[in-house]
Image (cartoon, rainbow, N blue to C red; front, top):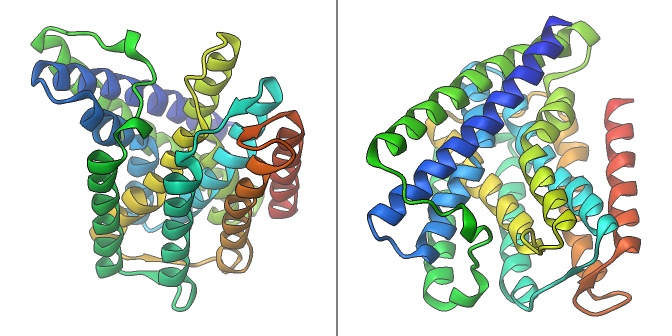
Length: 312
């Protein structure tokens, strides 16, 4: 019971901390007159990936590498299976051309790069982390130079010019909340894994990964209710790219990540590649460049089946 409480409290702190960090980051960029497009692709993306990043670094440093890997691989599966599935069940999404020209190919490249680095030796080394972060940097430069229309300001009404003391306060509070949340979440997750006799990987790929995907799910549902297309397929794919290249890249630079539970290599990683691959035909069938309720049923059904086979 205490472990479950730790997990819930940890997730609440991670979500709140991520929001505060995001608020401060956007306000700081407005103050420094940084172009919005640069902010959207760098500051905002990093801030929304902050929960995954903090949790993965903490888990790897504490000697729970399967939690770090399970968190990211599980988050990527949850973003497309659970979050996108629920979103398109509530309302169809029109997909932009940039999906198949940029977003999807880069996500597949990042997924394959991660697969090659970890599958054959079971370790994500520091130099591989450097290569992943370098790939992310090249992708961001390409987006900013050549794909400016593909990057949108999703929530312009959130852009507030805050006084400096508030920015510092939000940055401080956000940082402390993320740190505290990661401590509680990892303690709770490890405790729950040992209490139920399952591996860190199973807890990481289910409970922790769904928890760190809650902000995306909440934003998606709110967007559908408000009839705004504030969440798009591009956002979720962008989140997956950041999870792999930034979260795992930075974590492995700090400390190499070694796979302990082989289920991650024999099952989870193939689920991640499979569901990422599946999104492309779903976007074109039956109607071109649109995701509807039928696609939602397929994605959600696959996600439920994935969780069932992982837990049992």
